[in-house]
Amino acid sequence: MTDPAPDFAGMTLDELRVALAPDIAASAIFDGWNETALIAAAEMAGCDVDVAKLAFPDKPLNGRAMDMIEAWITSVDQAMETEWPAERLAELKIRERIRELVAFRLKAVEDIDEALRRALAVMAMPQNAARALQIGWRSADIMWRLAGDTATDYNHYTKRAILAGIYSATLAYFVNDDSEGKEKSYAFLDRRIDGVMRFEKAKAKFTNRNVELPSLSRFLGRLRYPSR
Image (cartoon, rainbow, N blue to C red; front, side, top):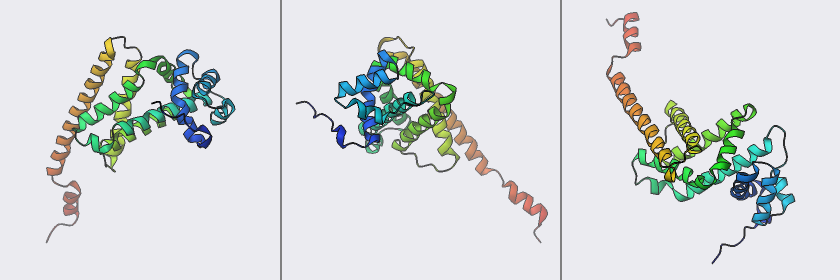
């Protein structure tokens, strides 16, 4: 039994962008992230081409391409949240949670790595750099939230920055990996995560050591206001 065709007419434009994004990515393998890929995707999905163009209007400086790429990444975010809800991840250790989430994202693009290569090239353009960073940060934030992170201090930001860096570096390695099953990419990912785990352990020891040290502010206060 096949899944019913999506009701594109009943979708908001935001929903339509995400619904069309996987087909656009599949077309981008051959055509790049452009109007040709958009039209091919709409026809493949059974969506009115004019409506698809309304969802992805033409913009200068690769703005339409970035809209399509962001929608594609959002579709991967949503698929990841469905496949790995927080309660399922809770059964794993923190390192395994992050590893499984990044690995899911790699598997999601494994058969369309040429579309990924083209997307990375568009995102690397100077005019798109700030937006690309925002998109990467958002995906890293979703992964950490699914993994159970509730930090609100500076750790909130450092964790997401580090994970976004790991993910982007792994993607760059992934698109050029010709090993069987991309096994070198997964080994690369494991090494990056292991490095972060070692750093976190060292940081925890340093932090704990600081807790045990005398308070500098208290010491200076006593110099200024000596006890009688």
